[in-house]
Image (cartoon, rainbow, N blue to C red):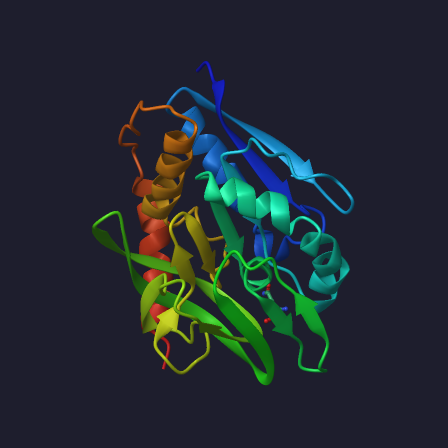
Length: 247
Ligand code: GLN
């Protein structure tokens, strides 16, 4: 199938922030566009590279504290162009370590403070006990509510300010901080979540919601035709069942 590049995606630090195969989220964007005859162009950027201003989607995966420490200072120099792109309507997705760095900052358990880029009004501090396990949550975006599933493993406790809302209401799992029943954060087209696994292969609705926003930002109004998602739905059902078995 022909695939003209419809969406340009900037993948930040692909070699450093890729825990639990978070790179798989990009494969999902690629395939779900390709199945509709649309292309994805991926621009990978690392330490010292400028942020391309004209991407429709910016993506940061998760990482251990040591990986985050390697990129956090560099990322803080990228905050201006990232913020401008987001203000112009680009989609921004951060997973776990990437989510934490989209906020105001992350303090590790040993007291090291990493700056964030402030695209999400959240603040994270690590605790000694990790929050680990399968997650199921209800997510409302674009007037639709769906169950989103995934896996979390983080020391960080994230608290939201007034500038964003939780991405999900937990059915199962620990979420942002283990206390308030919420997971992730959303502000316009900026989304942060702790869910790995990776996130998108078993949550095709969420993948298409993000792609719809990116296409809109690209000025492409083709609409996303329904796909045969029976494999994705099986993966979703298995992950939901796993989350349901948690004590
Ligand atoms: N290092 C962060 C934490 O433990 C993020 C971990 C991750 O990306 N899985 O909170």
